[in-house]
Image (tube, rainbow, N blue to C red):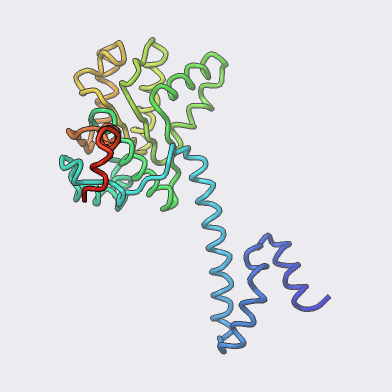
Length: 261
């Protein structure tokens, strides 16, 4: 076995596959460009480290179950001028994680609440934190079913263990029943006690949460945890989807206008 074959076999045995695939090419480059041994080693280690980071990021993104990829830069602040751009950019530093500051996005459907929530949570995952996304309805249904099946404690960790949790569309559907309200409170309370920030989107005003939960006491307890040290966005603009619909309707109704400019 040649030296090259031995190195490749040993790197494979150590599960350093990226290094195994790159070491020979880098060795030739090092010879051509007269690298030092340390520089060659640094390049080889960097190759493996980059591959490992990318693999772990892919795994964290898959685990997070984000409904789509969104970024802060994609957000159209001109269309939604009520959104404080500087505040969003400050949140993008992820300081809110260390400070355990919940984030609430209030506004009508389609105004960009979920976009911003997913974008911030994605930044957290890219920085190495664990994130998770769920609608409020799915969270409650999952945990109520787990309670019936006798595995509530283990399933609860799905929502309480991640550093950042996005709970989307609170109030879009009623959180009916005592059990559903109870498990929702348990998630929010556990995260509050652990110092894990929760990002919530809702199309209902906070005074309406008693109706959502069917219990003003539970709603007050949930809001007490979510509002403590919270950052609240009240997005007052119109729906992105309605804008697209209106644009399509205009283009369809007045096809001649498309060539006017």
